[in-house]
Length: 247
Image (tube, rainbow, N blue to C red; front, side):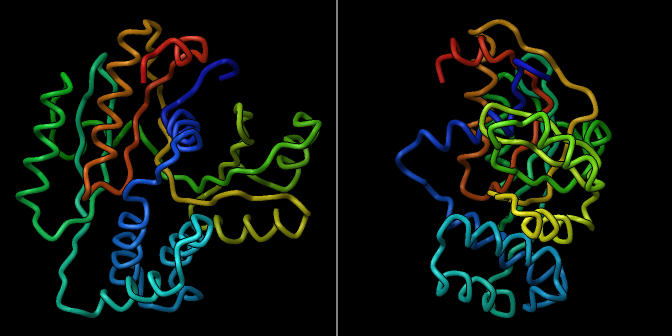
């Protein structure tokens, strides 16, 4: 994928340029509450999902009080549930949207509207999720010799590595995410993030700058919806096209 970017990479680069963090803390708080409820309680040592989200919250400098408040909400009256939406965006890009909502009907209608306004269409469960597989994704800060660094990562037993403009992406089985993160840290590597990620099995290329702009604007609209936690897409855009796209 040298010279090409998938949506996760593009989104990271865009966030790095944005001065405002938007509703990041709100999304993280919802994710912490959901992980506490569905992952097995408030102890991150025994709740893998919660540990992953808490690590992300700390990396984003989310205040400790906010994290503790989000955990306590899991046993409170607020009723959040996880909902997943699948569909197709412009250029036939396959999209999976993960949301946390206290009103499934409202969120579903808003997601449907975003798909339709963006030139896409919402589909039923399983329509596109078969084209994604869950992985643990760790971002490792690149050294002066990324090729040697990637070979050493492979020797450490990770499933796959990819060099991007801003980092080395390391893929592992979901259940090995926390263990691998610690192993990389013990080896002296700087791990900038660790998360559960839906990795596309097949990518949808978009090579026209105007169409790339349309696709990325659509995906950003989904990501900015208040209930949306994560957006996964199988789009593959050459870096030269990303640079030309008006996003």
